[in-house]
Image (cartoon, rainbow, N blue to C red; front, side):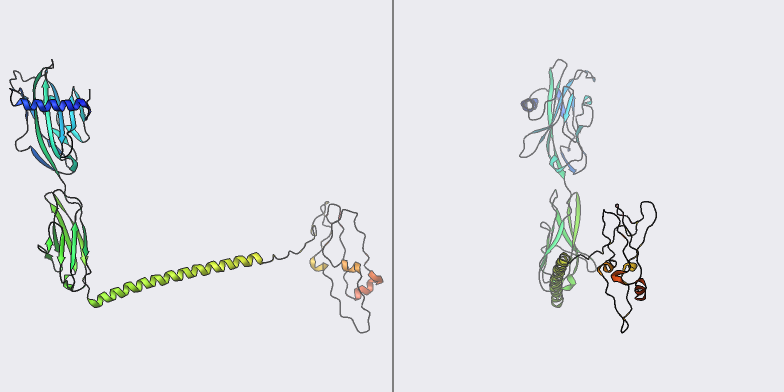
Length: 394
């Protein structure tokens, strides 16, 4: 049966064990719990494994064998400002424990040492070991308890370095260094690297606060300053570069900063102006496209270059052949014929589609003008193709 921590049964067991350990000094106890001399206070570095050593013996024992023993083991952790916390128990042959905790040996060896793996700072505190042994008839043979104190040490975490003040010649500058985590509290040491190395001590350097005060600085004090945070179990470093400027150099730096800011502002203005102009041109182009008239498409006679249903090309009329011929300039004293309506219709390349019978042949002598006269005038005879009901040329 497993008794979880924090239940009434657990509290009763704690009171029972504490009461029995108090009465043990006034009675002839058969059980005695041992802790190595000088090891009741232990220290461990965070991340390491640690063993809390403890074992028990039985007095008035007639035989070295003890198959009749029924041990009950409980390890507690007591921390300042917190309640007693059960971290491991062995009751009725069932082992219950917290993460990263275990027994080093089998409990049948009477060695009840506790192992903690990868200890953390929150594992610090006082560990109480309580052992109660009964026989096979549940008769108490003895009870004893011992306490061990564990302190987990933490090496300094990497510190952060900075400085306060403007490093001009003749001014004061303070360098600061602080580690966010360290147990025990870290001590700080400042030093300046080559080419002019220097180690600083109090009162300029504060080993507790990690500050270094530099007064009336000069150009020779420029360089790299290193802060070392250390305690009994480790150390870590950080550095800061200090560049002391003269008046003229400070003015140059200020001018460079101001010039850079003005350049950035001017560049941003040019970018905005370019974007606005591009947007305006794009809108104007869109307006022109919307107002423009689409070009007219030349009409083509459907079926002008088609093949008739019987698979033979009946007539091909080119655009040049449909153009009206250029007449020769009239000679003085000659008669210029006026083309009639029927002759004007021949110059049009557009052939209307009709579903009626094929048109009749058109006379090539309009207005009563003979063919020989038309030939002398430069006229070209044109054959007008006929269309079937399907619309193809025949």
